[in-house]
Length: 440
Image (cartoon, rainbow, N blue to C red; front, side, top):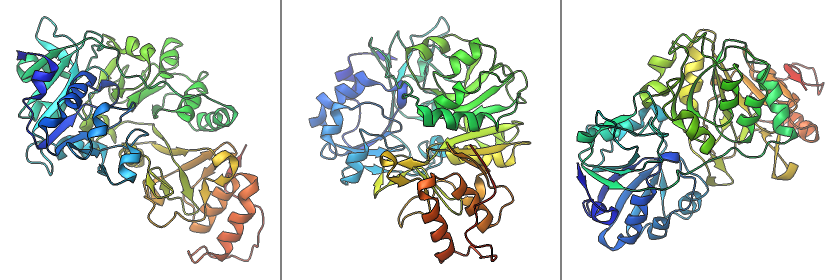
């Protein structure tokens, strides 16, 4: 491992080629700032980045000096994709490491990471961002690491030995934070409905944002919950402290909070630091079906932008823009399909645009992504109740979904149901109140 400055380190990158960047709260910002400063050295170097929560100066050099491939579009990246200056790669989260490793479809020339200082054994932790990065880094021909004393040392399979790091840069900066959004009455209502679907002893998977935070808030009276999730988040910390999350009944990794990432604020970073109850996993274990299908009572909870009357889910595409990505949602939905006692839940507010648009729609728009097919979702939850889609015909599931739409849009949805060319057979029951839901 050679120690040098960030500007010296990035000079070892090829002028063109492909570089995988550790995402989310593990973002190596010192190295990326140095890349921005040294932009004239590069002619189309491809940067592959997952979740990006803050603007970067190097984005100003896209696409002239750098090509950006996003694995999960966010607000800083979406305008570049929409303008055709960057691109999005739809790939299942569990398949990302193999895709960018030698022998994969898109092998990388280098990996940029942030790690903790080495311990007495020479091991550095990838801290809050392990899942997609650790196996790509272990197989990459060149690994450049910034060593940050503020990077938490997380337990599990997220370590790189100093011999696996070719070039190191010493730095000291706060980690990128992604605190949960504000929770309002709508989110709290959704949270209560979802909490009613989660039995004591279940193992849950949730994302980040206001709705997931509200769901976690609503679980305070539960017992012996476990976590196996794509990410740990702030809302889990008080549930652990209150004895709600214990992992005691998990069939895989009991008593451990298993995840691939820790995405949140300093509160979470302090919680995961050197915490033996935290188990950080590579993507093949955090998201892989072969492993996760053995997690009994697995409850997968994901968000969406819209759901159509057949149950198809769009969590990525909005008004012609790729505003988000596939992420791990389908990996977890599929795992819930096969796990003993597994359940998949999609939770979303009933309206968007300040109440002017329904998120329950007759059909997904032309070109919209189908993030989850209609057969993969058990429950759709809004603030108005729970639509149980299990064992439902097309018409039955449409009626259940209309019942959890905002009342202002229910008649329009019923009219669409009865006039659509999609085969929703009319059983002669007219426009009676829709059934198949638990309204709230």
